[in-house]
Length: 255
Image (cartoon, rainbow, N blue to C red; front, side, top):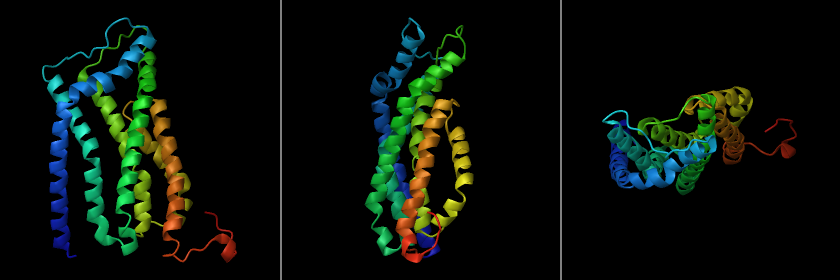
């Protein structure tokens, strides 16, 4: 494909993604009230009970536009989650021309793996959020009465779920870079210490709450995924780079 063919293909894929995201965000607007009552507010309610606050777990609007902005923001996050299969599919179809025939067959595994890891990341963020919120409230002191606005509270929980889901795409990115030859497993192995430091730093930046619970919940799985990415990279690229098992070639390189 020529350069302009790639530009046309990118434009077509972006249009597909935009239309899908618009439709899914509209669905997010419709299910906002249900999500607020059954998904987003329960962690806050449980934390208030644990902290001994005897009052309803209502969110307080401090700005006339706060409710409107929050509904739109949460609906966009919900739309991104609902549209994730189509977004991943179009992303993979765009990069397919750069892959070999054997690697093009990985479209379905790529989409399924991306959805599974995104769901796992969002699930961990949601289940960690209650402990993180309890830590943040208790750290503020016993004289602090937590009263959150919809924008601050819902923005935090939805962003954390989305950020964890995106962060869990990290191993897929590493495997893809190894498949196309940009990175090699040996390079990742040699840079392991620097990569782990980078992962922890990135996890600290991604988690907006800044609490150690959320940081550990994100950083530890990413470090494990990093090691698995190296192993998968060896298995996927050993024929291309002429790699054979150590027992057959008689050298002491470690994987």
